[in-house]
Amino acid sequence: MFGFFKNKYDNPALLEEIRQTEEKWFVFLDKLETRLDELCTAAVPELIAVFDQDTDPYKRAHGRMLTGLIGQINQMRQKAITAKEERIIPFMYASKSVLPDLISGAGREYHDRLYRFQMACFDRHHQFEDKINEGITALRSAEGNRGLEATYQQQIAEFERIKDKFLCKQCGGKMSIPKMYFIATYIQCPFCQTQNTYTPSTEMQLLFHQARPLAEQRTAHLLRAYETQHPKNPVLYQQYLRAMFDEWNKITPDMVAENERFYLRLLKDHSINHY
Amino acid sequence: MSDTEKKTTQSYLEQLKQKALSQENYGGEIKYEQAGMQVYDCPECGAGRALADGLTVCAYCGFKFMTVTLSDGIHIKKIDNS
Image (tube, rainbow over all chains, first blue to last red; front, side, top):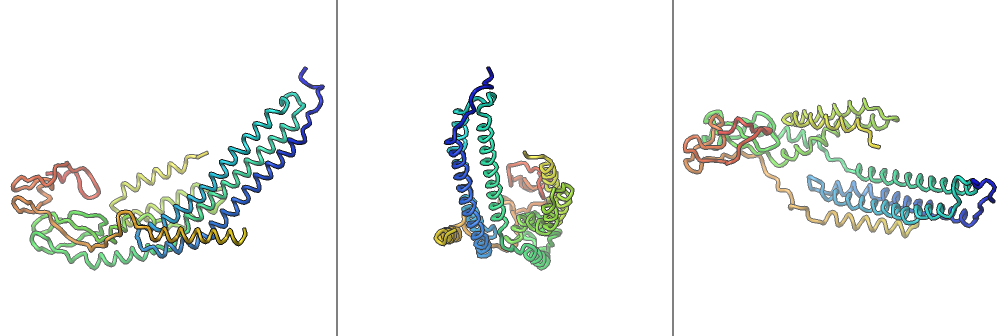
């Protein structure tokens, strides 16, 4: 009854197999990590070089290279997941099935050993996943300097230069553009009341899309202050977000209402714990 | 990591870089244009559009500039309908 007086279960071959499987798993992930480090270390300067060489305002060549690299890293991630699903988990279940019942006491030592094996393998995999995420973050942040502030100031100066140089296409009356627009806008002629369509230059239209990165650049120190704190202080994030949106609104004042809705959503998203 | 593996990584990166730079951008290259002013006259009677008369219909001959009803946007508002 209850198996109290049964002989202790003994299977040294299984213990050896557990040890070897664990060792192989660790070596496999070590190798993947070395490749990951090598790839990321070599890729960061190359990414910055491509960013600087890319003349496209949307930096699409840089985007393509970044996507390719992230694809490579995700392949490594997938390799680890496949190995875990094909080697570790089936081995765990297969080994467990040959052990005596856990409550019998006869195989308790082996169940414990198997549990330790499982935890060690899974923990190691979590560490690997963390490294993968760190690698992707490092690649994503590898950008050259966009010079957004200089471009913005240049466009403000350009607007000041051209804003009074337009004539109404209907009556030839002198027109003045009241503020810096980023999208095509109707401007009313003060003389004949005709709606003229003012289309900003391509560079000015692009500023509309660069407003957020520029605001982020201006408030990057606040985000850094938040990210370097452990544990993270949500108040610092709120301060950063408010400052970033204030800057963004200063650049594109026409979008204040839309930006505020976006601000509230980001604030709400941040307060949700994603576990 | 061995020298061979390092060389493989370097050559992979070089290939990727060349491909990324040489691939044509979707939609072609961006054409930079200067700021400009245009006007959309009525094609029927030549009258200009005035905000006070609405932007969708010519106030003089009734020509429909657009068949959609304007809704509130960044610069155009509902009240701009004729």
